[in-house]
Length: 139
Image: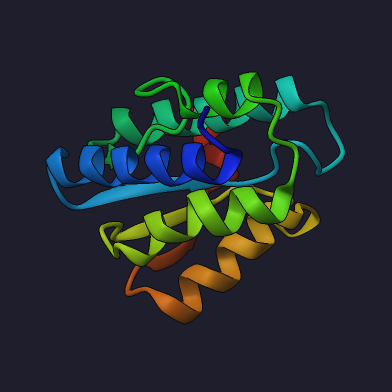
């Protein structure tokens, strides 16, 4: 049986392969998911809205929720060790340095995960850090 670490490593390798196949440049949306003042469902909806807006504006977006089932597999496996997920799944994806930019949603700094992403991306990749313009939600 696959351990949590083995599952996360396998999912990260798959995510990197999907990233390589996307038309470049590729961007990602970062923001609160399980923290940040609202529910997980509300946060996920906002992240998905931002991804859709960026796609409408012509960006290639590494779609964390719809283009793969990594998040669903992590939840199904009962993986709740935040550090393990960030270090074993997210870190290798960012270290692949295939993202040109990361768009951060409002209140990202209230999220432990988004703060980790912001700090890691700025220190260890060539991706640009951008604030997602709130007015784009109203267009």
